[in-house]
Length: 244
Image (cartoon, rainbow, N blue to C red):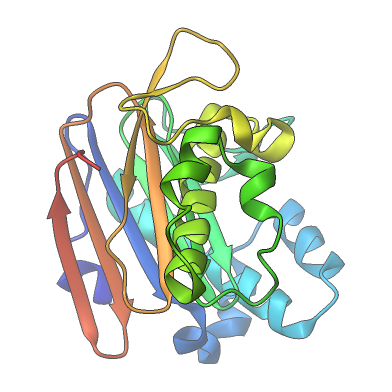
């Protein structure tokens, strides 16, 4: 199995894994993937308007369970995932472990950590929609100044990277976009909690294949992060510290 070949395994200590994949490469297994989803996931998939979105959702959620199975050490059993009141994913049978999922088009990223919280976000580049006004809406004054000298594709990539970093923090915080992204100052290290709680968020921008930008956020001082890209060209595994 690709995950085993990449070395994805049971978490130890304050460790985290991020696995990124192209769901289109698993489209032949769509029927089997749908069979492992819970009722709330099937209902959510059915509400999606476009077939491509439904397919990506089902495959991403099925692969999510496979990553969890490896990281939690459940053998052949696929772990349960339940949403909380705000829609954030919980692992009810695995106290002390947390997870996060991000999808962008056909691509998906799964984060699993043995920590108090985790948030991951990926975005496709170039943008599929206009970014005009996005920086003004989500950026702090310092962030806007930092990007002022950029133009064209470098500016777009920087804005998407900023968006991914802020959303990763807000997912880890447990509120998602119910909190104002402009309250997240990504130039801080660590990042102050956007809702004023006495927490400090460690933020790392992920090294991903061309066409994707992403970030992961966790509280406190994690020990290790491993990232894995499962692609047609073979697995790419990297290990990183937590310095932006």
